[in-house]
Length: 212
Image (cartoon, rainbow, N blue to C red; front, side, top):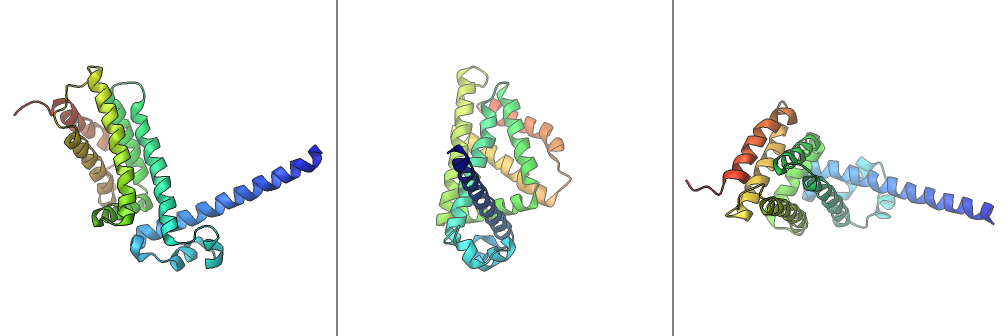
């Protein structure tokens, strides 16, 4: 009996692996197309060509461009959650924040990643359905930063923050701006940015409550 079941399980596992590989092939192609042509400009035909798949084959995995965007958004959500979770580890909160940001900078040095982020930002400003989906991801990142800062305040590592929302927005603006700046200034490496960012974040999260 075992000799019969084992091959069936192997075949099922092989089919699942093939399915996952093809799915990722499509998503990788779509990310490249979206980075180059935008969510609105990229067509399913363009994605098919980049993935080297026929429309019929591609539609077996994703019935529409919107379904592809949703899958990318879900992956983006998982990636963002995993990245900001590094701020929850041990050690000084400033060290954790800088380490998280530097990891983000390294990831964003990929032209495809930075191009896709620029397109996500544009869609979010348009308040489209796509933009709203990615705005939910952004809010999840904000929630994690809020938790990390609140815990640091409770433990006495940071002074009370008068305007938590503005502080988080300023922190994210600095990090996102540096990440996108790398597109135009490739010499702005994470190693060069890290010590300067540390001073910037120290000013924002440690001393912002002081009155001028």
